[in-house]
Length: 202
Ligand code: AMP
Image: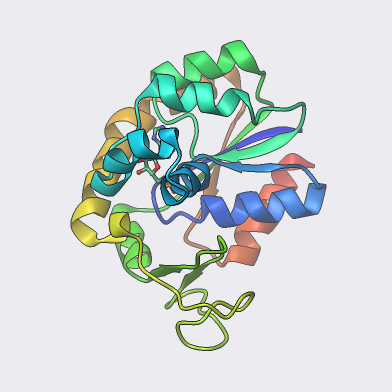
């Protein structure tokens, strides 16, 4: 199973990729999470990537593509990649993707959701409006205090959305022509979005 989950910021692509990873017991590759872990651990890659992440800009293609080669296996669900035409072309050389799931939401919903997003060091992600933790501001899993990512501030979110429209959306046509693109309404409940995805994959 080789699945890509795409969508604008706040569409829930990470959440759905995680659900798919558990359901089918396949590795979840989140490019954003890998980059953030490298920044946190102050690796060489992290030092290069940090300024791009904090500005909400894309990390240069070469760096991301090289990094991913270590993670791509025969089965995976990946989110946050490819994000532009150059990455889609590089990806084609490495593996053959079976399904591209596009979880779509309008910009106003993306901004509303991301302003409510809270993250935990352990990787868990919540939303104070749509998926709150059981105890306010504490992670359900490890009970640490949640925080708001720098790149989840509204001005940066708007910039990331414009990169999504200008750079990521053009690759959707490419996948549509290949017949592997499926569009899913991301404004539904998490469970309903997942149900739609499972119907597509069946
Ligand atoms: P995400 O968590 O998927 O929203 O990604 C967070 C940040 O990581 C992005 O704003 C970029 O700075 C970087 N990033 C994630 N995926 C990619 C990618 N495919 N290419 C370049 N940069 C990326």
